[in-house]
Amino acid sequence: MQGLSRITKQTVITKFQARIRGRQLRNKQLRQAVLNRDIPLMNWLITNGVNVNAQNRDGYTPLHIAVRAGNIDIVDKLLAKGANVNVTDNMGRTALHLAEKTDYLGMLKYFASLPTDGKYEFISEVVLDHSKPELLSDDMSVWHRQVNGLINFMGY
Image (cartoon, rainbow, N blue to C red; front, side, top):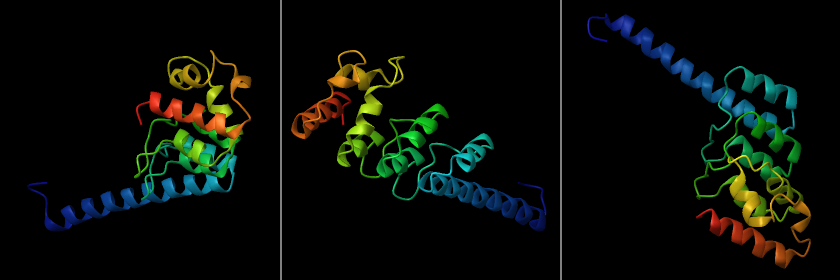
């Protein structure tokens, strides 16, 4: 910014700061839309450039939030929009870790049923015998062992 007047430099800085604040606000709006299960707003925000993997101060992405809320519909839509299942929060937990912690069998079965296209293969190969969600046990002790095996396989 050499050669610019002090006022011009300040204007550039102010515009940059406003852009950052605007981005932070839109990221917050996306997380709020996920919590409120507001799919039209969520889709609009993502279509208009909000980062689907933006993290809050705890490191939660919209995917983490949807998993904690137990909303498979939102999780499915976030993954379709490019949400990354491998992003970790400040405690090193992925969305899959949170699915295991919430004891929500439906969510884990959803993750296990994802297509084995390379992107999600690590989930279905470990927990399932090649994409058969019915192999996940409804017995919670067996289910926890399966999930812990999956998490250990993933290297967490």
